[in-house]
Length: 396
Ligand code: AMP
Image 1 (cartoon, rainbow, N blue to C red):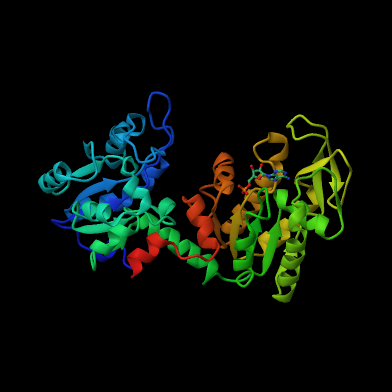
Image 2 (tube, protein in one colour):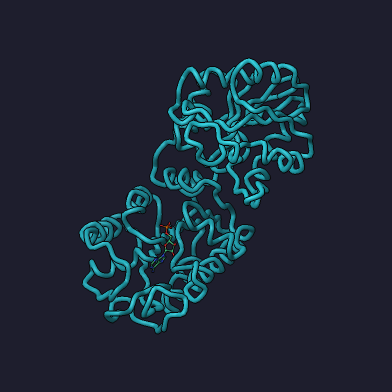
């Protein structure tokens, strides 16, 4: 696996695919710059070697049309502040004017190209467009994990034009290493904590990880499909009635593979999907009609705690309750605390995919776990065992 550390960028122009798809407010100010911060080490490595950096990214969903609201010019100042270099901007990402500007770029300088998705060819993975992009640098660096699951021109196809001169940036390399640490080289016991709304969206992940884990903690809305499948009463809880057989099969498969499955035994049940609803603790398999389970109960959390504290490798994907509502966030916060303690005790913990990252950030756990993945969809696809095209393109 080649990273930026395998190259000396002195006198070279690095064409870096970053993920600067950051949120902007109504005045086009960047409201969360963590993705820019995340790309900084890679950019600095190139500059410190004595090279120059050409940054390319998408922003929003302009769907192949120029849209001034989604111009990367809005973020140029912020990038300059974070990188500590006055970043130049050009209002296109391919063509003669861009190539000229790239050519004139001096060592130590940074150029930000305009939104790639102003061209429909970006998302369609157009080869000719990718070739034009390739004219903008000597070495291609992919540091955008968030789009590594897309075979777009700038994330995948462009790599074909850099035979021997392509590598991963630090961010993408770290994501790959963190996933490997859980899925391939994780110290046992390995525990996966899976939550979120539906079994159907996590089924491929469960099937892929059963061979790799010792414990599976199931929480959140998916709980009730499993409980109902086992003959329990789930009241008005979220439940996928067409996935009951699937749930039983998963449980059987887990047993056959020696994986201990831990479902909640009790839940916080509410009489409405509302933060201010009336609540009571209910056995997970005896939830009355008119009531729905919205968080893990105290006995469940005690069980989960024992499993998590005994783990050496932890993967956490999905909240164990409706964490967006304060009264149903306690279970997810408790899980965060258990993972924090396990990590302090030497476990490797990876949080990633979908809403778990939002939950971890909301409750301030991002510095207490070993690794928080930056790529929602890309992380989910990795956990499903797929080879991401953006990663494959660098490896081959
Ligand atoms: P996912 O994107 O699949 O990880 O699902 C995350 C969503 O699942 C969050 O918005 C949670 O509010 C929701 N969720 C978690 N537990 C429950 C539950 N018991 N009932 C309904 N929704 C839930």
